Length: 289
Image (cartoon, rainbow, N blue to C red; front, side, top):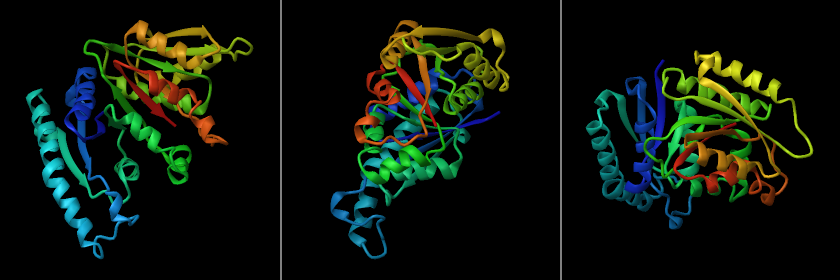
């Protein structure tokens, strides 16, 4: 089954990280369809949200200038690289956004309307993720509205394989398992490790957690011999997950983000997913809600 990824394009370095991860991770690239997406940055002096281009011709001029000077060349370089690496032209589409809603909301809008299997970002993903919790509007989008997986690529290292899937019994983690199973169903070179981190003072039934997650993965056609399990005991789940990802040289770490709205901004930045995002390197972080 075809997999359709939305790959955000910005500057050359950030874009190259997401493209390199996709190329290095997948062997059956003929099953991939990529849409490259460039959002024209909204300038602070435009002052309209959303921008009404009909009544703000100056903003329209800024948009077209940025698209011509930065967007089109960046997109052309990304396309040229993909073609040079063997992607067919009909596998790669391009799409520009005028940035009316701001970068975050434009990516969210396109990802949800396009029904992509994942949105892929380069190193700027950390800034993008933090922007999503920087104000009350983005806060609500972050915790209530996102319905698509996000892949954030941080200096992906060539040669890394396999996916570390963090499970705790939540519905979000079951959706992560389903997502990983779908993406890896035709990638036999990648194995899947289900990881449960148990706190010192409490531990749920790991076998039950693993059983549900394995069922989700196998339902996508991944054979059981490609799935393993591991339990760690730690009072600092994020640190243990990062250590395991580093030692095992995993290509990606997959984790669910809670649907429960945190009560304070401080609580948001204490979540495991954001700690992993800040600390992960040489790999990608796959986030599902």
